[in-house]
Image (cartoon, rainbow, N blue to C red):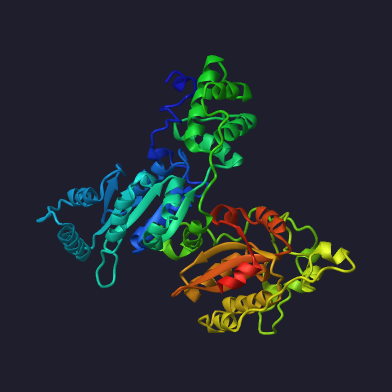
Length: 502
């Protein structure tokens, strides 16, 4: 390119074709990659990765293929429009397997037998399906049948679906509920934030050989972040055009002027990326990312084991941290003094303690004759679900269940809590590990643990705080630690809904 020598580059830094040497590990990309490796190596079934067009899914897939160990056989399906009978043949071709019969049932049995032989040799097989949102429903149903291939103890085929947000919509169809049930972890490729775009630009330049002060000025990086909506493909296009404009101006730095020129030359300058994502689908994947310390033997980075945020978030006032509502009601709970102090900013603390203890909001406290606030105690079977929940003797889990039961019996119907995640993995030791790490980031007394029962399946929902209304909960979510904002859906849930789900 014309500007390579001008900036001292040995290759183009902003190509839109995936180049794994330019994989940006920040903005959850590295954590998601590590989680995918962990899931594939630990028989985790079907995994979903969704993201907007140009968010970096294909790059992630290519890096994943490089990072998997040699004993993992990879099958990459780039053509999602395969009919259901062809997907079996595509997998068999990559495994050098010839079917003896065209009947689907026979082909499936022969594939299972071949996979069992590979497993006995210490081999794993993973199918990576790109552009999965474009798959016909019949082909997705075939994916579900493939996920059923297993030995007495182990899944024989790991499947990873990469797709745009339309994949989430497809899986929400009633006809897809059986497939959706088999998805154990879901990850979202979120757009880059403004400060992440600046670091991304610097990283790509240096990966291409640049040495020197940052080429993109802060104002230029901010303009690119805004115009691109944080989508890496758009960032690359704008950055490339801005470098060319700087070269034409004989400048060794990119300013807002060159970025404005690049934006005018790009069709998407005024477009905004869609932000419709299935937040509930993120919880399983979020829990896995937060529990990556379990997979240290596989080189997975330990996200939650960092001591705390580098800049502790501010608290509006000391009273918002320690008040009557935060004090455990039951004497069996561990003292809160041992928990670290940093708490979410802006949000402050959940509801005003004094008002919440009385079961009223601040606005109602100002009214001398407030209307009665509906509060419904838990049904007997819901209370029994708390007492029957297996804690394994884990003290933090026992404490939070006790406190959650008390809150569930006292909070008004229209008060809210922020859902961090919901998961079918009710292993008490795993939940305890999350709680141990969470108390370095948020006040432990605000973490609530709800046992759920949906049909014949037990689940657990973890939420944060008690707030007088939805607006207060939404505001509070914005002040939670960055790790939580990035990894969790942070859906406000009314206590009426929380109680009904127990």
